Length: 397
Length: 145
Image (cartoon, rainbow over all chains, first blue to last red; front, side, top):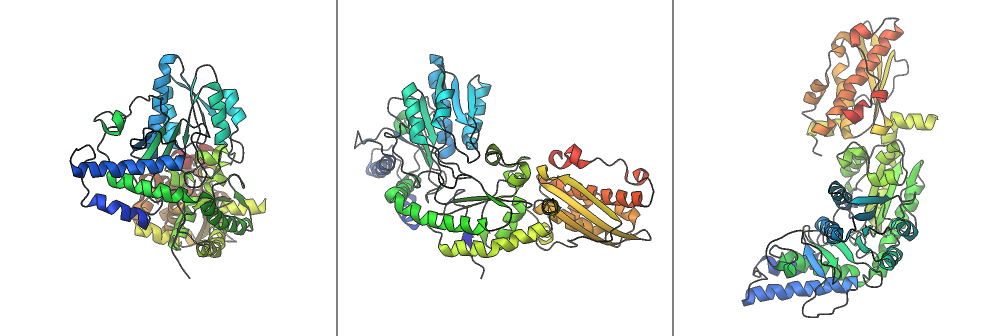
């Protein structure tokens, strides 16, 4: 029987009912400006600082100032946080003669394109390769560090293939060499235990809409003492570091969302990875399919396969007609001429990258969703292969 | 990516999918690297395209343009089929997103390549009829269009 399965939670998630309930008062009667001194404004500010504490707690930030946390900055989302951290660190360190940045080839575009902009300004960027499973090592990072290295920026977990990087080890290397370390943790929050102190993370980006809060809200954690230049100038919001009237409802929602996501990381991971593993096992039985990413160091809700002889967009459209929302790294879905840079970075040839399918789960998915996907997917693949001259070529060879 | 209803119809229920065993004109264009391969089979009798089938590896637009193109030449004379342009296919599909126009070019090329094969099999130089056909595999036509 046809059902609706939303399996694209790495793209975005639904707002949870708790988040929406927490937001509603601030979308209705609680419209005060958090900078205003009257009660309506003060109430908004108190709600905002409560949310900030929840973010601190989720990231293991020590609460040095219970009344006034100083290391969490609300932004418009993960992309702004990445831009601010990377451009800010680059411009902070450049006057000290440090104009070198280390990252990986398979970061999110918010990081890669920011690095490209800095290259045009005269910064030098080292793009570390990843292995065929999509992993980078702390040793690779260490050997790339130079006298003039300003920043290392490496994602916590990959958004397409779900590989989890050795962030604590990389953090330790950066600390040893006195290099600033930023991680884009947009996909990792709620899935992996994060502690910015123990893991030596100087800056961390996260996004609300990946953890059941709304779109347009994110966070940059920036360790006290790192005086990043502002990305957005204006009023004195966020302690003069990030201007713009605060979006209280979104901030409150993010606080509730991150608290829920991080309340029971092992329990959540167990539930999600049970669905993931059943799906991986089922798809693996099909002919000429390849799991992309690492089988073990993998986000609990991430499944990514390539199907030989099939093109990803045609696959997504067919699945959509059957009620399944998923995504692909094919060129046709990326809006460019090349398939996903992530899939190419792990050594996939173009035609195999074109046939990729990513399915990502959240708390709202069930085993019935997995079973439904496994019920319809083989027929979809068979149909597309039956009309594919590429499949004909592959099977004849 | 917004597709017209016509594109979605031809993608979901493609016309003329398959192969023709005794085809007398076969053409294949595109390449796997770009993510598009179209293969056209023609059965031509007395200058008329009696049957046409296709196989396509590619996106929704690639499948829909193949389907529409086969429908537009089926039962037509070779001369009429030679006049089929990519823009006529796009128009018949009620438009394509700009980044997908190359799919319609590929469909036109696939038909011309199959017709060239037909002429060649008849011992006739196809160039005066179909012009100089670029080899899309070498030219990376699909990627560059």
